[in-house]
Length: 536
Image (tube, rainbow, N blue to C red; front, side, top):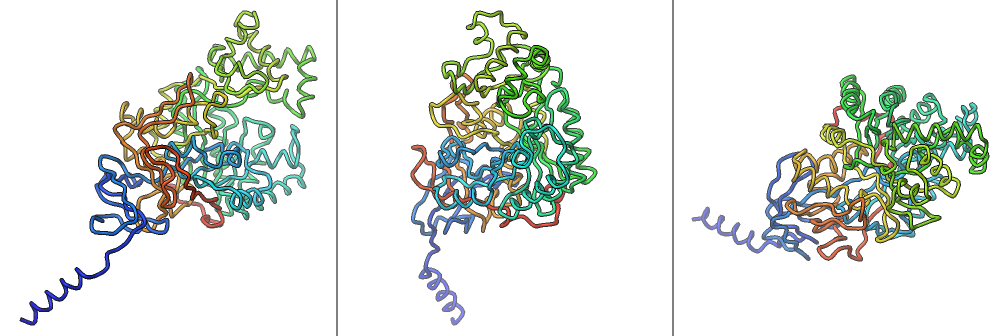
């Protein structure tokens, strides 16, 4: 009798106990937690910006509930290569967050902020961000500050100054060092210089992301140089926006991925990131030999008006038009942003040469490229990659999905479609339609894998205790809409984007809610240690 009374009393207490309360419950969704594990149906309870409980929350109280029936609940996507230089002008980052991106890593290709701490402080204090941002310190930025645009080795004093700037940036929150060895002035640096600077970042727990010295004919040498830098500096490496550029190198991803595998087997911590398109996006100047660009614009102008030097410049451009980013056809070079003539945006170099009344030959294309650079240059889209290479790199287990995209303001200029569509394209075109990856593996490559690369232990997975950065999407309809012809189109199938528990995108688009933060490496990185090469 006493035992029955005890049982009844316990039942009564349970019935009367206060129910657990959440700020937000996302219910009835299919959870892909970011680890690569199979999807499972459960609810996610969020309180004070963090995931508090994952399970059956049907009896819990909540300030708001989102019905995710038929939808996928995923960690927010982490863009490991983002050109967010204009974040202070576009703090809502709408083109990015509407892709499902909740964290973006800026400062790629050697272009991190110069006054690092002041920049992060200003961004944190004075701007309401829709997503989280983190930054790398940039080799090109630092070298230009110390040495200008000169083609020479640094003096001992100059190298010491650059090392000090790397150390200072790391102390102020950088997650590592980026290089743009294809671009000025990084292209003038020797490998030993990059190793010395990488050693500083690596000793403080940072990573090294490398825009390779060459992605065309010199691709294999570029990959091997990055491996050497990683080994000598004892620093984790990311081959950023990895690709094989130009027809002569199509298929080379077989070798580059084998180099990555070999390096990992030898204990080196090396990964790749990649955008899912067969076209790149950079300045027209990438076609011009680097020696011709040393110094100032006036220096280039002098060389371009010197008959002998112009002949060498044109020869170099023609070579690149044939073998590298030109892909052997002026139609492969599309203008994205031409500040001095916006009517050219969306057109090709072929179109412009014809418009000028010239034969669309490589020779004429080279001369027009020089003339355009003298007027102020242009941002261009270069259609010169193979889909086979894109797929092979994408399928590698240590390739992360990343946009390499800039922040786009709707209707302005003619951006690369990756600015609007990278992550939905992976999930819609490559997962659902082409079945290149499983949904679980694709989500892993855009959530937990980049989170691990940045040591973001509190993000990148749906797990109790982590920050509630969450993307809810319809796996049956998600797709990119942005095209090379009509880039200004938001994707479809992204139903909700939640940053630190705050609904920032809903079915109506961008809300006015902002909870993005500036993430600092000093809060995450562990000095003097190299992360495991397995990535597990």
